[in-house]
Image (cartoon, rainbow, N blue to C red; front, side, top):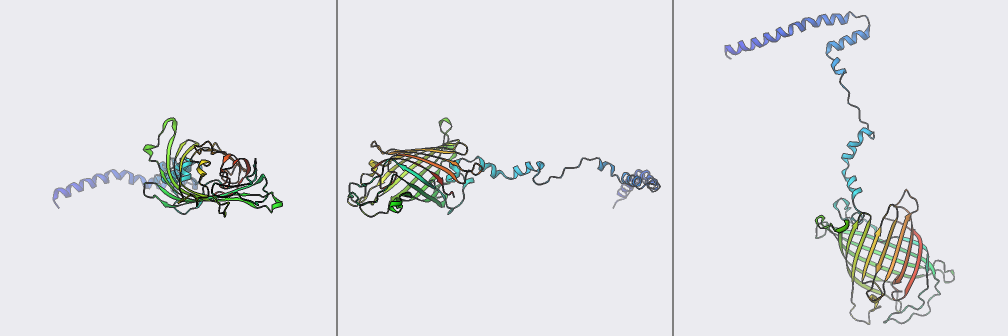
Length: 361
């Protein structure tokens, strides 16, 4: 190491010692002053000043944030963006799991159509002589009454998520509807009719860039499906048909609109067809408008056959307990037209039903 380097370092040390000298000389005097104080509190304050703690005491302390307190709320909100996204998602997206935030995986059973038990189902008249062009008129039927109960169970499950197209899902569904002569004790309360309907549904969400429509509407999804419907009865009461459909779903805040077009899959021959004229009476299309204002749910469905027939149905529900809108709900339904049951596909009916939703998945 060079002599100039040693000289430079020595000069710095000498300067530091010179500056520290008064402070070191003052420290013993300050310490002696503290020791000489008679009161303990005064001595402690003197020691704190000597240690330089006085400035630290004057700094504002950071408040302790207790989980759940008001100070913790900004952290909680920032840590849970998924909750905010879920609350902002649309009803149609939550129902069909259209957005990625609403996806719940496969094989989770959930409701499809309303599940209800309506013990009060009043009809204008009963079809006492059901028939079709290829099936003879049924005889010796029980003496059915105009009042009965109406029951429906409907479930669905996603079996393939992100199927073929981005965000698209494949679902299977099953719906069973029964007319039960609950109040007909003279005939031992028989089931007048039961319809079975399995279904396969392919749901494709609309890309966000294509969703915007005039007047604030959004094109949310497109569906394609295949349906089998039958009543499981032997001849001459057997009724069945298969059909395919395409559907689009639109949404505007709490209003949803579904437009469906259907096409019947023809049977091999007219002799084996239980009801060759069924689409002259039942729907070739369906237009459904649903409104969910607050706790209520209201829907109207028009099902034209394009031959002057078809049907109209109104549904309304409201929670039994206002604080549990997803629990038990009152349910009311009005139906007019053809095809309330498959057995009555060519019988015009008017009915009013009152009851409860029995469960919701």
